Image 1 (cartoon, rainbow, N blue to C red):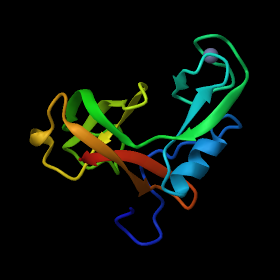
Image 2 (cartoon, rainbow, N blue to C red; image 1 turned 90 degrees about the vertical axis):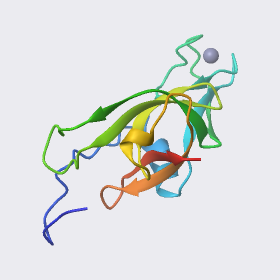
Image 3 (cartoon, rainbow, N blue to C red; image 1 turned 30 degrees about the horizontal axis):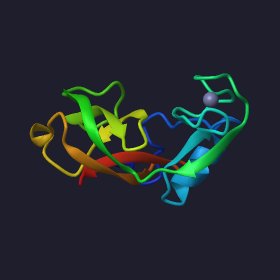
Length: 138
Ligand SMILES: [Zn+2]
């Protein structure tokens, strides 16, 4: 990721927390894991300790199909820190399971991204331990 050898990534790297550790482990294995409530059956994203629908603490981890569609997006021509390579696409993706995830659409010209476009997950290595879920045209 870095331009000069030995240089650390200039893109902020997410920090693991107890409630997100399993999520990041999944990403490292190429799996997009979502929480699912054992009481009301709703899928949950982002990872957390309580179901936001019924407040249950009984949550399971399930693997997402990784497929979804673009709900909305914006094309960024300037990054917040060095290391972001504009232009890039920030998008809200509606996964098949019914949760919405903010990510990037990569692997195509930003001008080709459309609302409703079918996408599937891929993973980009950000650090030794963190692989970030991103989306490519499906
Ligand atoms: Zn619930």
